[in-house]
Length: 510
Image 1 (cartoon, one colour):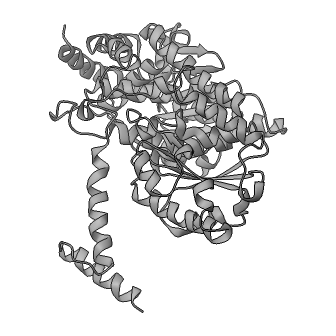
Image 2 (cartoon, helix red, strand yellow; image 1 turned 120 degrees about the horizontal axis):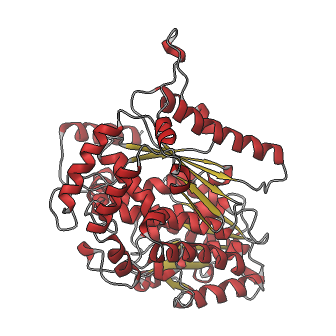
Image 3 (cartoon, helix red, strand yellow; image 1 turned 135 degrees about the vertical axis):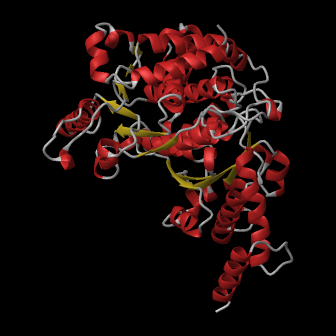
């Protein structure tokens, strides 16, 4: 049987499984919970409420074998070229290895910063870092900073700037003392329009308050283009390498995480990396039937392509993980939102659900109505943290109680034949991930888990998750639109665009 035969058998299995409820699957398979629950240090993942049976899982595992998933993952980890369109390896696993070449410069910088060797204007101790980046150069670091605020060193606070809207940079700089502030400019190419625009404002802010040469001392670049950073008047010793083989959305483990290392301190930063490495080892060493990222990818593949569920909700019942759904939205949709294979041929397999979410219990008062009673079931990832770190144990128990209640309600529903308005159909799939506590190690493992799941899902669908050509066209057109708004010559476009340009220019001129 080849992989196409397996896909046909999976399509047939989907028709059969639709006639069976998740509740019934528990009744007919006494080993279901044990077989679909996997524990790893600090983490327990329960897939048992997903809508598939043992036969279906067997077919999915066969398909993964046929697609040579394990071989592909080994090639990726060993640095072989897996990013076909850009002829590059994918370096995010290498970035978190203990012997990675960027590790020592980061460690030394953090030590010098906390010991007061690195100072601001007039020898002032550094109290704040303004981290300027966008996309993967922003979302990952911002997520981790929010998640681990209870673990960070008290001396260093970080403010993040991403949007080209001036309100973002204005808010970040507001109330800061320029003499005790460092500015990190994070851009692989050092030409990202939004980042460079904000960096210019920050540079002017430093120089205006501290003198013309202040920015050269207090600005740092994290980039693969040291020459452009130098042209921006950033000193060579203030430039940290951003490896070209690491995609932005996979980059927080590299020098892109410099602001995190500075705020967390070296010990916590190393624990974050260690948690990710533990998940790397699990991925590469564990049989597929007990392999967390591979199982999760197979289930997502099943939900998308056979149960025809095109969306996925991410709901962490932890306020400090509020940004997780946004980070995953970029990770999954930018990596896998493609309609051609890595060889350029059209694909009929979906690898990118529409990802959305928010923190529980806020999400319950926003979109859970549609999850429970909407016509189209949406698989949900519930993420909970067991140990209270906020010194309010009853609040923690309330969060966990709501997580458990929502997963029960989605699966079991509540039949009310007398009043359709209060009928809950149930039979809606979910995965539950429980962290023992929100530590740097456990967070590193959780984020690496989702990274690997995304890559495996892409490989199952024969696409390249490491490029992102789909973001380029809009960037190029934006330059032309900027030229038109500045009164320069540029191509003309459709009637609607021309009318909007005319309207904007008319209002700007008043």
